[in-house]
Image 1: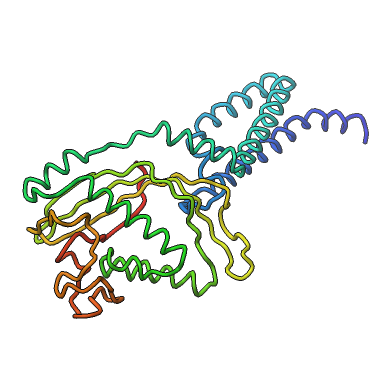
Image 2: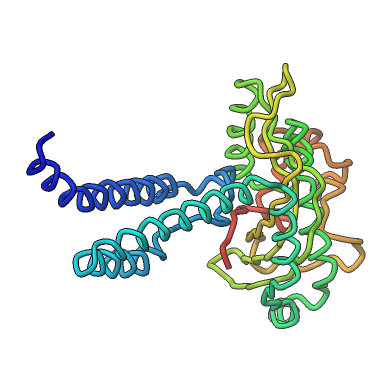
Length: 311
């Protein structure tokens, strides 16, 4: 290489390096952001903890713009600072990724999240609304019932036996959950939900909607939630050692005008309201003895929806 070409090469080298570094930075940033787009599955690595998200884009753009401007005015200083910045950013990203896959670190954050979490408790107000038309209604008893339903759902889901939950769910919700569970059975997988700790459960809202009454409950719980292969017992999704802090809204319906039986210990249906036989509910929600449908809200509260919430 002659001296003229060498001088030209050295003159353009900083700009070439700058373009390469900025390109690498942009690739890493865009690649990370794209991985998160639309991924609402709670099994996604890290569960949203750590890493760079779209909220950081504006600040990152300002820093890059500043460094490029500095590089144009003073190539040597600008290049050094840009390299230092990218090295620090990459180190921070790797640390965040390590933490995002470390159950101990995640569980510590979950404990802190639970300790700092404040969930609105409307139980007293909601109970007063219901008691105005149903004096025997008990907030404590219903909350106990909601907790029982939630725990039964999780246990039945893990056991892949949806029959125990049939007395508590409407036909539509039961069929929806059963279809999802049947898919796990077909695939030879089990979604294990264990070590459940309910941290909060309260009445959230009540309304009368035509010929039915609607009562919503908010429930927060910590649990282990992962998927295994039934044959090999290999973990396919999530981590058996990782805690999840999840928030749910449970929606219960009953026929408008129904009154709470003060003689009952809770809201659990233990006998058919029509024939009095011990509860043995078929897949269609009917009493196995007299054929009466007892899970449609005509006789007591029935769960019609359960979904996660972000509040």
